[in-house]
Length: 100
Length: 416
Image (cartoon, chains in turn brown, blue):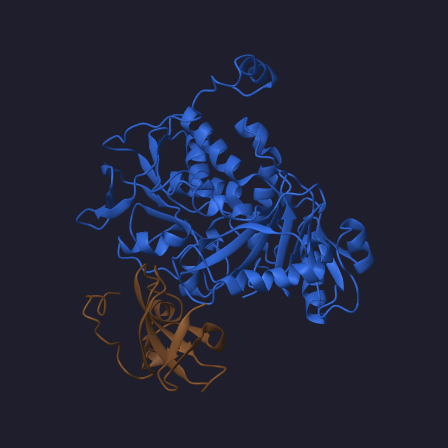
């Protein structure tokens, strides 16, 4: 059971209050009519799935109900940062920010 | 050495001290015709069928740990083929047919036990979905039948069919040819048979990089035991597939999750079949050692931790205690997690990749063990011929671009 700090409620709460939302910062194509099937597939299905630092979405369903993002190490499950939706991924100085 | 009653008697006279090693442990050669990355059941099986069916003997399996130490040795060993779509029925039924003769084929007892797999229905929706599966399977010539709650209890006496349960048993779908097998024996049996055909099995060799030539084709793999040159690489690495494929700059439609299982203290035979319930989330059978083997769910988030949260297994135990009140006082001896690679449509990915010479067999998610022989068989054919085996063709990576998904979410062993 993870302990997750909601950046809106500013409280560390148990994982069971939250819902996982998958990889963060996957941008929907700006002009859907003009993208190829391969680009759609990349947006819909292809995921980084790294063994290491991962930016991901969570939703505080049993709290404020809002989406936010977290940076977590997928080997240790340690949560390194949480931040509001719409903000860019924080640079934790470990060289993983631009890795895809 | 061939296993038989005579070899058993001969070794018994020697107090079982002279059994030979079951497979060779050679140093890696500088080059092979093909290299399989991943020494689990699917990878070892692929090597076996490449050697046996396609005559490729100069091949190697590289494994970062020990054979069958990943999901092959961590799963709950359920075998069944009662999937909904024709593409899935073809590959899972091929597997069941291969399971039926696998011990003879390998001269190694994989302890395949067709004791029946019973899937419980608890809601009106479950009844409709399972009956649809029963009809679809029977049209495809795959056995599957509908049971009333009373018939389900007759087949599995410890089952609680009281209408007072929070989610009472309203019926069940039974595949009598489904069952279990001994997971370690599958890895060892394939390894032994492949090694005897000349396949080099190289343990403790982790792949660190995939080498490619100027036009992008595979040239070899860099391992912790040195560089191995080859023009054909088959990645069969389950939860770590994304990591390996990223070494060749290929992004995959996969997410890796910890999936948990646990076993109880051993008791006398009490549970005659496999019982599954997707709705209340319980998977249980009894091993030949007497332990109850219980499958829990995946964690909510992607992870490579190989553990999983305790609340996930506690949730499954709640359901088991409701369905089998007699098991309430039993103690759980061990629990563990395996890293499973889940695709968006819950069907595997088998075939070629955008990189010439690089093949992949992955995405088996929470239910890959049952498919081991069939998966290995069609993947070996795909690698040998350089084009998809007909049964593997629908499971190609391109389906995520064409949109021809094979949506088995409803049939997956874990409610998603």
